[in-house]
Image (cartoon, rainbow, N blue to C red):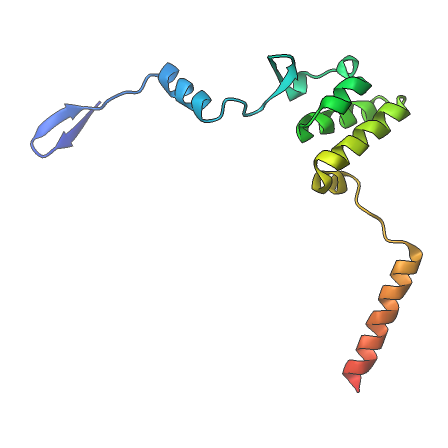
Length: 128
């Protein structure tokens, strides 16, 4: 392919795929990858149920890995209740926002009644 510049025709410079992949890895060396052990990079989807134990949960600081642990433990039928609870607590510690996305807080009956009462009082005040 060629590109015209003025009267001269110059060939387009092609970037090799290997070089562009090299640059992409320099920009985001761990994108989509997590530490799966000592000095070892591992894809989150490669984590298996057998990889999860209390020590790994305690040492984990990556919310994606913790969410994967929770997914696997719940998918297994929540058979490992203590391990699942420890993982949930660690996710809450590491990323509370993500924890509440997975487990939204449910309003109690008392909170619902208080809120409705406040709304009814406000509505009466506005109508006056």
